[in-house]
Image (cartoon, rainbow, N blue to C red; front, side):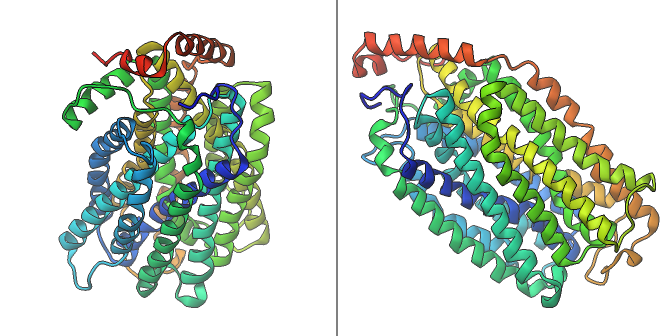
Length: 494
């Protein structure tokens, strides 16, 4: 770490901006993946929902190793470009190529051919994103230890991640999959759609790495350790990280809610096209409402967290997500919601999505900032800076959105006997009972699991006062030892 005090350091706007832009690529990949991939393989290509979900779940199993491994590798990497930036530069092109392959399977593949193709390119896409995303998240946690400054850094990241979601929504629903261009069932539009997103990923990832290179002198250096096999070091690092109580409660809480949000995300197109019977323009308006809410929620987070704490922000956003996901479906099933095809329906859904986005953003920002605080607590307990490990675990939990989410959603579609094929165009092509079951799966069943997440979050007790005390102890420790000696004495996980 540079001689500037990380506890008080205010990060320049240019660095925060460049760091935030890097999240644009992750927003592109996540939204393109979660919104379109199951619908593409299941409804358009005819792959069984269960097989599609299984393929994406298999890819997630690889993430269970590669996410913490990427974190551990970057925590211990030594180079002139620091320990995070080399991975950011190297990941961009492989990510774009893998994403393009994901949406470009050869014609004439049967069920198992599609299954293996989806599995392979889902693994490659996720693996390439891991090499970028985990070091990128860890970089943000290292840029400052100031409690409020971290909230701002995370806010930049969330802002540009939301812009990435906006870009996918506009590029997809307004152009490639607009009704005038064949809608969501036009198979020929998926490859150029993926190519467009891939190019944007490369540009924004490289810009983020280049724009934050001046932060390298201010970042932590890897601890001095005996050389070990990377997998052995990973096991030791994971064991040490799992010993942190604050981390455990945050991780399991967000894992559950991300999986449930993933189920909703992969079923969105089914709900919009068949349950609510929306046009492509109306679908885009719903996406824009959520995005507008997320953007409005960014500047509201800092004043909210100054008056409350990060745990409150996480609980508020999680509870709001569940409520606004549940209400429209329950009210429709209770026959007290506006009818399909009416302006009232679209306006009401837009209002619900906007409010959901505003409050959900409080959870996103609070959670990201809280995880950076956990890294400080872990350093005090263990003597080692391991942001990469912690954010690797969080990257894994966010990928569970489209991994386990797709698996559960795909199995759910098969359980309710959802009809597949490009000839299933409107709600009239789907049995009424199947539509009702789709709504129940999308709303009440999924939202109920938020209770588990909220219970986990109530056990997180790393308050602002506790964090300030941690930083005081860390500052005292750092002043007592020269940098080389402090790094040498960093305790190894045992």
